[in-house]
Image 1 (cartoon, rainbow, N blue to C red):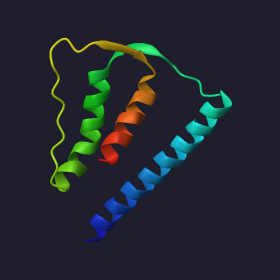
Image 2 (image 1 turned 90 degrees about the vertical axis):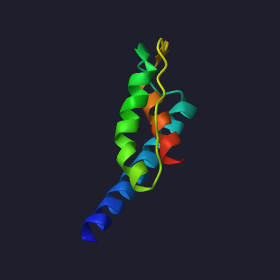
Image 3 (image 1 turned 120 degrees about the horizontal axis):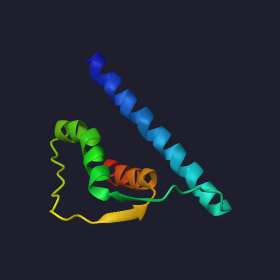
Image 4 (image 1 turned 30 degrees about the vertical axis):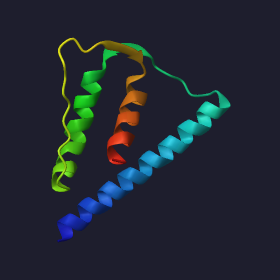
Length: 94
């Protein structure tokens, strides 16, 4: 039971930290100070990494998150860290 409480506390603190980072980024965007590190990358790599991270918690909650990667997934030109955070927020809010 203690292990489960520690896992819940860790997930909660991680979620709060993500919210703080999001608020700071919103502020930076409003002030025009957010620096993007854009590059070409395969978005499926970001999706798969986020699914690896959230998969165990989803399964514990009785959910199944999958990435149906179709052959020929296009590359994107974006900041991979920002895309990762967006995907993370979408999954964690689902």
